[in-house]
Image (cartoon, rainbow, N blue to C red; front, side, top):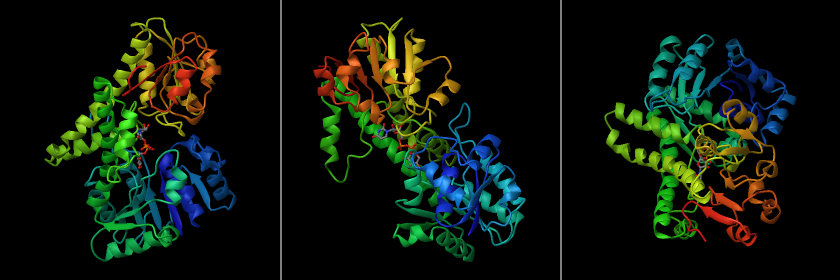
Length: 439
Ligand code: UDX
């Protein structure tokens, strides 16, 4: 099937290449020339495991192309809207300007019978509004909402093998037509037995924010427990293991530490609260405010812990930060807890040196005031304390004996509860972590 993908960020670029992999003929459209140039040359504009191979394969087969010109989307049967919906500056609500401009642009090329498929995360009610615009301008065209649940770092796998498909459809025959077009788009995925939920626009929009709110709540729950563990001397890691054995709870997303960041969870729970307020249902989501505050408090606690282990003052101390991306296997630094902590330490007078296997270019661009080093060894040269803030595997695999030879003081703060505590302590390190007692 011929299809277009509007917006070629993490979501759109991976979606476009994955659709080509499924056998479709795809054109990706983005307003940013540099991104289009990179993708056209089979070069991923961001770090995402497996994406380079997927992109290369689709380009080689001639099934994928990119353009800055919306007219390239003409003649496509399906048009995916994959643009960003960031948090509005100074408020909680989502900024929908890119969704609106992408839809406006599409109207120039859209024909009756074609389907506009929204994948961006939007406030509930957006799809119904857009549907009116689309069908008002192009009678016979359809709009569907088909949220995407991909995780950065696993985007290729999550797109080609999602754990569910959700179709938000208009009522009546239009809904049936859009449903069969989507089934054709995802034929291989549907045939693999992937669960499918066919529903209305509002439910489809809410599935996405409800899922992200649940995940954020789970993380903040365990981080609230970590606060209590700190107050009582209990151990949050063992606590998480023990409650996680209960199937009804499950161990996933119960890793206590610095909390959640990135381009989705933080802004999605805030936009959800803002939308609930507009709908007069704000009370239903006041708990998300607490989820957000617990999350932000962990960053402050980490800075406090660093000060504590540095004999009560950060002034002039050399601090090494291992990891800058908001999570491992990503170069994304949007709302990264690690960088937030690094910047706070710097503001309190510490000399902070940050390292990360993938995110350093992005860091240098956005946070030029911090120092950076390519390897943990360089970053930790004569350090007074080492902070693990993003749990890349290579940091978990560091040999604490050898690494101990580089630093001035063997003090390690495990912001992700990811290091083998016994091993580090055996190598003479003073080990501290959020939610766990000092030795
Ligand atoms: C998330 C959702 O998981 C995904 O379904 C949605 O489509 C987009 O948002 P992503 O932002 O890529 O995906 O990252 P995710 O793996 O969910 O992690 C989010 C944050 O939570 C990271 O900062 C991570 O470090 C943190 N986290 C995760 C924890 O602090 N503890 C955990 O147990 C799990």
